[in-house]
Length: 323
Picture (tube, rainbow, N blue to C red):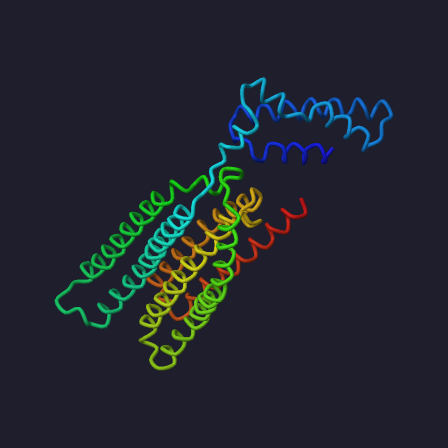
């Protein structure tokens, strides 16, 4: 039975992804399943039943002719990308991901500056400024940075809107020479990608060390260590975003397994979990810092959140594979 489903998937792979074609595919599958089970009940073997079913229902040309579509016309609807279009895709992707990276950087930096303003007031460095004014300045700059970040996120989405079709199967193709060129570019980019990841991971690991050093030097300087910690994490996050974006762009064009339907569904679930865990971790971090003044230890919330993300992602991937 799986052979019939795979056969249909291959037949319809290069045909237009329209509701009409999907309906036709489901009708064919239903008729082929019915015939398959009839043959099995009649005593036919698995291979005999599948062979008869495909020979009787597998002529896609006749069905397309009934709909007034030739096979060549259907295949011609698959868009072949030119080298200029591919270069434009890379340029727009790099620009969009750079804007997203800057937006995330600003959100984290805004939190660091909010902590810094509070500490500067507590240490008497903001002469003539009341406590409410200092808090207002800190919150205002944070909201401003978040507003700028959201604007960058929206604009980056518009930049990539025209390339949404690249993520869908059967919507584009590449000439062979262009595929080879992209594969070579991807291979050449690998050292740069790994170098960026290593630097980002190193910054994440070293960021708590800065905090511990400030505690050892002067416990009253702990808050300044927190600001540096957040700044280093912001830089690391920016590196992760821009380096991963180019790698993903190569994978999309080469239609690698990482952009299969199952993988995209998995990424959506993990992304939804990340959208909850990271804002929650930040909220807990700021709350415990401002209310209980636990800046010297509450930084551990972020490594814990990272471990939870890794555990959830790994567990979900394993369960999906088992299913």
